[in-house]
Structures are given as structure tokens and as C-alpha cells.
Image (cartoon, rainbow, N blue to C red; front, side):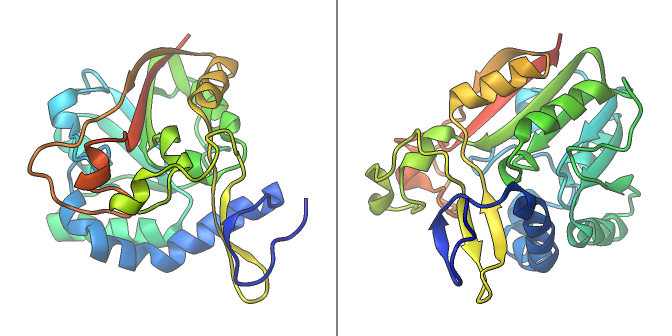
Amino acid sequence: MTQPPADFAGFQEVPPSAAGPAARRWWDENAVEYLDDHGDFLGPQDFCWCPEGLREADVQLLGPVVGRRVLEVGAGAGQCSRWLRQAGAQVVATDLSAGMLTAGRRLDRSVGTATPLVQADARTLPFADAAFDIAFTAFGAIPFVPDAVRVHREVARVLRPGGRWVFAVTHPVRWAFPDDPGPEGLTATLSYFDRRPYVETDASGQVTYAEYHRTVGDHVADLVTAGFVLERLVEPEWPAGHDRVWGGWGPVRGERIPGTAIFVTRRG
């Protein structure tokens, strides 16, 4: 495995040790811009699972939350956790990025809430065994680590037996297509089975961004290894009248190709 060249953007194997620091730096540096771009869609205290606009208030993938101990992994600015507190849950939000948690504290001040925010790597969660009833992440943590099975194992450790673990990721099928929301994104150009991460580097060759592809089978295998039982795989359809473009998500591709996969599981 070699270090990718300078100013590189594409699919390339990189040392696993580069992923964690890259994710932390990228989200620290881009937290404000990310919320400027997407904050109006996400809201300060709303639970949106994906760019398709699927809301937890409508689908209730977490099940009953009143009085439940809930952990959000890769929470960003904690919008989902803020909504869950309003819904009666006892929630803790974690994220690797200090920049995103700082943004979360600003949102707390703006809406008059006090969300428990903890900086933590999802692969080494600072909580006791069986501390939570429910855990979830909406596009957090899992795409940005080379060893997602470690995330699942840590979540299994901190969940009570039978506890629910729900996570949303880019639909694995999307990785075969260019990241283009228009017609150019409708033709598969890569192998679905090419598991090289998408990587960006700076002028010195340092990895600044890494996002990892896993097939549906890879996700299921990781879950089984960590002791989870898959109950549902949700593939949200693009809703009529939803015209917002978010990265590679948009109405042109959304009506033809799934953009998000949500795995609903329980600890065995």
C-alpha cells in the first residue's frame, strides 16, 4: 500500500492509519461551510435520515423513544439528538470533530437547549457496557473509517441485549456511478465490487479526505460479526416535488437509483 500522490482525488488504497486523522481534520475545517450549505434542510432540531428527506417523526425506525437511553454516533451538530430530547428520550450525541460539536453548541444556544455532546471516536466509545437502549447514526462515522466492524462492535458493547442499532449510509449501488446528480450520473463507470476508498490529498500528499465503500454484503457481514440481527433494510424513494440537490443526490438520479440505505438492526 503506497501513499497517494499530491493533489489527488480519486479511488486509491491508503494506509488505514490515515483515515481517522483525515476525517477529524476535514470535519473540523468544513463544519461551518457544511452547515451553511445544508443547515436549512437539516434544521437546528430535526431528525432527517437522508437527502431524500425521510424524517424519523414519520417512519419511527428507532421505535418508542420516550424515556429510552439513546446514543447518536457521528452526530455532527446534534440536530437529530436535539429532536429526540424534545420527543422525550435521554440522549447523548458523540462526534469525532470538535468543529462540529462547537457548531452544535451554537445551535443549542440559538434554540435554548442543552444537548449532551461528547467528542469521541466511534471505534472507542467512552461509555459503560449496556449503557443504552438505542443507538443510531445518519451518515456518521461508518463511511469514514476503514474498519467499520469496530464501530459495530463498540455499539454492540454499549447497547443492552435486544437494543436497536440503526444507521444510514450512501446506498452501496451508488458507488458504481459518478457522483453527479444529473444525467451523467446515470451510467455506471466503476465496479460495484471495487472497494478502494475515495481519497483526496493536499499538495504534500497528505490524505485530507477518505470515504470507504462497502457492498450490501459487506455491511451485513460486519453486522453479523458484531452480533447484530438485521430486521429491515430501508431504501427511501425520492419523493415527488423534492427538488433539492445535495452532492450526488437529486431528483434526476433519485427517481431511478437508490441513494440511501438504512439498516435497522437489534443486538442479539
